[in-house]
Image (cartoon, rainbow, N blue to C red; front, top):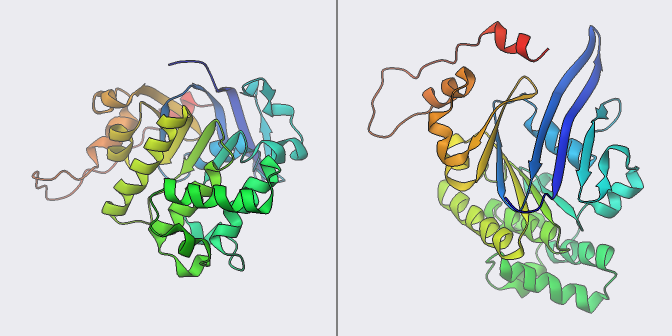
Length: 281
């Protein structure tokens, strides 16, 4: 791994509850260089909350604390909302799961991409439009001029996700966080979207955090994998070594995956050990 783009040490996200604080993320630590890092785990394991905490998107009454949360030379742990707004898009960006909840329904997709360019790079309207068309072409959208004028409800799920990738990358961030970017897409479109992200990330020398439930996808696409359970990282390994993971939780997730050519009467169920949570206390 080359230079460190992001350093996270003992990140904690806490929400108040009726029976006391709920610790959604517990002492998560990792670094990210110019690589593809996968974060996997079940729903509720803290994957998306970790990504949102890095982006400064955990709203009140949630509390974000960390011994270190640093993007390059910028201390994110003590950054104001105004400071985060300057960073989002230009230095770090996030692609969410479903574009229809992220795109403005009353603006054309091209205008939304161009708006990001103008906001961060202070470009003119014509410069932003030209950059948006180039970005639409970079994410393999045919006829960018036509798509530029379309509204979110007029594009398919796969095209909408490409539009979101274009919007998040147009200002040239160092890091892209992709939160389940392909879960709503069919397998063929999933492969195309991942290939586009991979090409853009590698050609620009970026760091990528891919948050996913799909262990097969992460093991084949990423360089490293963090496995989260109960809000904490229980195992870290090279993506190619994921099938040889040692933690019983990771082994249980792998065992529950369906396998082509291996017919089983029923899929194994993950047997949780209370000691796993005790380890996270």
